[in-house]
Image (cartoon, rainbow, N blue to C red; front, side):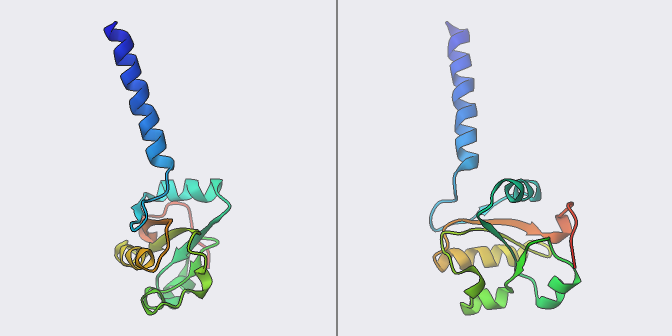
Length: 130
């Protein structure tokens, strides 16, 4: 009997883990994810936008393929014309992770509901483009 209960408990923990990792962040918050998770999301999901919040000069020096450049200063000023859909899944990055966290918080405050911060491009092992 205890083996069955242990097995049921293990299954419940595994199911809870799968559900937790596939849900969108709670409204009013963003989720911090790894570069690996972000890369996986990029490979699997069509309806998302990768947002580079560095300066235009930094973006020109090299960025993640397909990313759009919306500098942190633009986000703070409310200039969000490139990401006008508040329901859009957003993957946010900067150079080291500081600006991406600030931008993610600002985007949530401005009504975006599916915001994921994957830190800095310095930790991105999948290559960049110019």
